[in-house]
Image 1 (tube, each protein chain N blue to C red):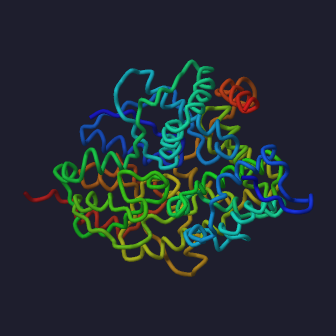
Image 2 (cartoon, rainbow over the protein chains, first blue to last red):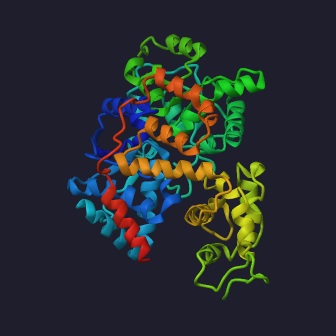
Image 3 (tube, chains in turn blue, green):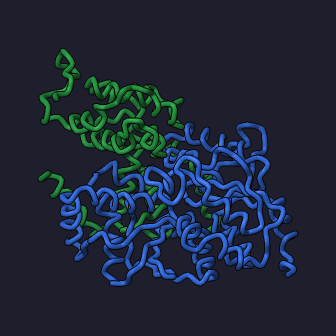
Length: 296
Length: 192
């Protein structure tokens, strides 16, 4: 299996552990990732506010770079906001030939053209659909027995386009979690919004979103996410919210490939668990409890 | 079908076709005011007008009220309203169009959000990728308010300790990585 790999800006900075653990897990699963040469920002949530056309051209530039290589492969994208932006170009240019022409006029400035030939896919889609829980389960050397995991999908890997999972009541992470030997924390907050960029521009509203999610996660050993923005909001602000409430709502927020990597027997260093802000001692001791290789 | 024109010249729509709000009106004119959007919105409680009310204001052409409202700046693009709208209207996309119009017309009751987006996109033009430290520094400078950065200091320090913020020196002069593409987009939009 071979995919183009578009990490996006967050994975170079605040979400480095997502980048490193994704690459480590894909390597362990025998999946080849071809990182795009000279990729640029997808425009995040800001592009569309400044210019609709720019919000199409920026993601299209990256798909065009992939097309230029001549390699036939889908593109795997770990960041949900990047994924949505790239998918949005694919969806909107399908219905609007004029828009596609304009996009290509702008890309010509960079010597590129976009022919709608590379399909953008979210990392979760690739893990759940292409690789699948069964394959991953067969590679587990350190089952996460006794661990209760809250699957947190967030918004933009599911909505508005959906496709590989139910955009309201997603379940695609559950077979993966169970394949690792862990249990699923049953909750209804998996597809709720974390407040996203409002944490920068409308903090009070975003803190309330995170607070609701942290409350519902109580009882789980960790939350797993597939989005750098979700992870940052849930991980980076839980101490502030705990202080505001006078109650400890702390819980480890791992990226899905970090959790998978642990069960595949990869070292914590390879998965960069030290880069997550919160690594609860309770989780650490449970993981060490399951560190003995599975008796076969 | 023409948009409903509110009587009085102050904040009604202008002649159909010449008004940028017209396209936005087109998007949501089939709204039947069921309120599914409001019921689905995680941030509705923090809004001055609820999403359903905002769409009614657009239908009625209440231009001044729309742009005085903070509602569309409180959208976190979760797409629940778009997914659930029984009329299948592109509501989140339309929120984007309202934000764009507000920026283009300088109608910014809360210019923190707009300044953040503008700084972000300027960063992308310069470097091709977001340089988080450089971007946040420029954003704080654009706010001209020494208090705001303090609220972000705890997170900034935590990120720095983890080595997640690159401290590379920004390039202040010289050509930006995406100058040509940005220029072309501007030109194409001017001709639209």
